[in-house]
Length: 223
Image (cartoon, rainbow, N blue to C red; front, side):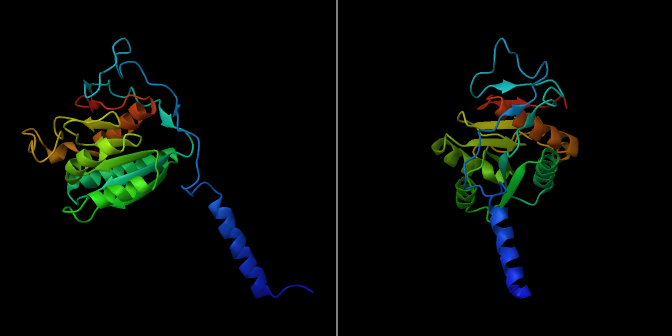
């Protein structure tokens, strides 16, 4: 005797749920270490003299274009603020993730007076990379990142004053915020956060991280 249609529908739904859990969207499961697909172009860094920790490198425009993340790259976009530059950076990260088929999740830090719990939430997800967008996050990140050295962070449109080896930043003269204690750069220019520059920031930064060029600042004035 055939089972009732209702029972069939329930079984089908359960099967779909089981299939979904095994599809690679469950971050609780281990996965291969991400790698760079493609190679850096000439002028990204001086290969004969790689940048030292906390140093600033000025890659040639487009020298990062040949590098892509491997399949299944897990990224958390950590963002705080509704100002124009932060929105432009967050949009660039989302567009990049869509283009590169990255598994992207987002943590929006709504309370600027209590950001560390939101950073902890991003850490608890277990991503390959946390991308930070928004000046409000810089001081809390300076506290947290040094205590989580196995987690890679990428700061776009700002930088930490004293980054550890797991924090990479992409900056330019119109950005370069380094924390409240240092104040806003005299060259800060919200208009410099164009879609082209923000896209270059996420792509160049990820290319550096995937090639183990971390703990440095990439300077993109030439873009």
